[in-house]
Length: 351
Image 1 (cartoon, rainbow, N blue to C red):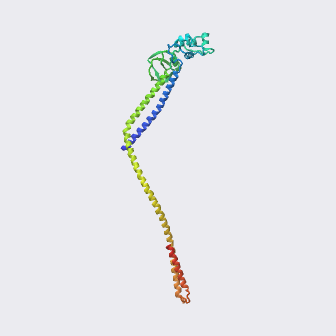
Image 2 (tube, one colour; image 1 turned 60 degrees about the vertical axis):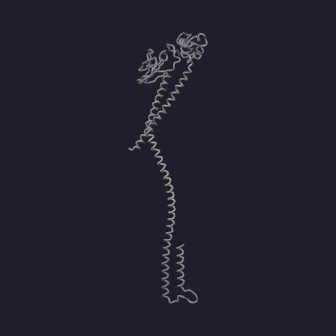
């Protein structure tokens, strides 16, 4: 393989690699933009939570937040709680959460009627949900969440129960559900790969941020590969570009030469057509003359035959060849006829 072929193969390989990397980058960029959109949408939803502006010790909770606390406790009735009373205004956010929990779990008629009305769909919660502003939890298969320590024991035997226990715990920041056991964890840590039956339970916002971070790292990695590939291929590209420029100039030169040759060929074709026409005309004329010669040859033989006949008649006859009184005899008429025929033939030949 010569140098040019090697350069061409290298350039082709680099070009194909760059095209593949660019396609992979474009696909990842689409996923990254979607991940950003999902995270922004999540933040918008979280920002619209009724109690998002209140912390555990906040007082003067508004009506919208109090109604949300009442509903989260499991109560079905509306218009029962009033955030504008002096008692409600003096309570902290966690105080209102605890009071609503008591209304939802006490079994006397007053609390049942006040919380549920005619409904019998009673809550089974055993402790108040103080994490009312905490983000929802989500699970990721094949991963585990270790945190920085244990957040207590859980008797959950299903993924859903484990997720609910972590959500209701005041200290749980994440959990791992594996082999039918729920491990509640406290603190913050990244998730790590684990067995296929392991599920990392983490806040949805954390999951969305981790997805964005992973896609961002992949984009940076591919971007670096593209940059390195361009730097590696630059010398090959420059050489290939130089060869391409030389080839282009050669092709342009050949094109101009072919243009000039095409004009010469066109002239030659025109001259050939003229010569061919002339040759055909000459061939027709030659053919005509050929038949004319044949005809004159036959005519000459006929004239010679007549002259011989006339001569033989003149020698055998005793009749005088010239008559007196100014009239021509028969031989003179034959001779005159032959002369006329020959004159006509000569005229036809040179016409």
